[in-house]
Image 1 (cartoon, helix red, strand yellow):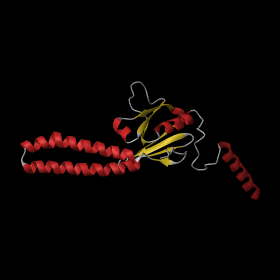
Image 2 (cartoon, helix red, strand yellow):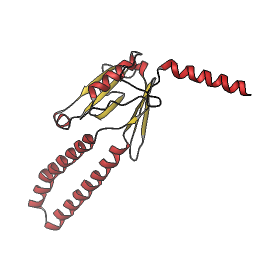
Image 3 (tube, helix red, strand yellow):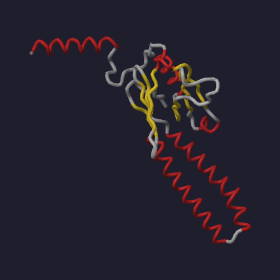
Image 4 (cartoon, helix red, strand yellow):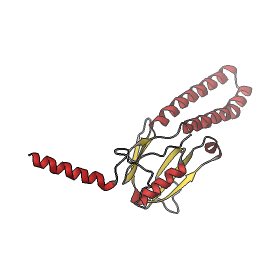
Length: 194
């Protein structure tokens, strides 16, 4: 299976492994709730009350399962030559833009479950936001399968030099100055026709 590193200007999302990881967390929480709350409740409470609590737990489980699928589908990232953007959220939408010149560090986080799904999270620290008392990052890229390659790509953009393998999504054959030169030629041709 060939790894796909996102191209500049192309919107991308997390791996389906992130959605599966969320479902594993949900199932673990449901089993925990069943064992810790419902089983003891069933021993000491009347059967109709236990059934009602079980029904409430089942409805909450189904709503969360539906929400996970919707939430996973809203997570989107885009890398450009100057900055990166992100958006996510089902009911409350969050978006952000992080210029590369503010990025100071990128950490890769991968727990045992995410490792089994082949995914990791990139925590991007920025100047002015992250400090010694700040535990969270300004932006997190979750559910990334090609995390090492993506970190190298972003750090290359931070340093002002994108890796050679990176192509622009808009024009794969374009090298920075070639596009500008072509635009200048087109402008001159249009001005002559006036």
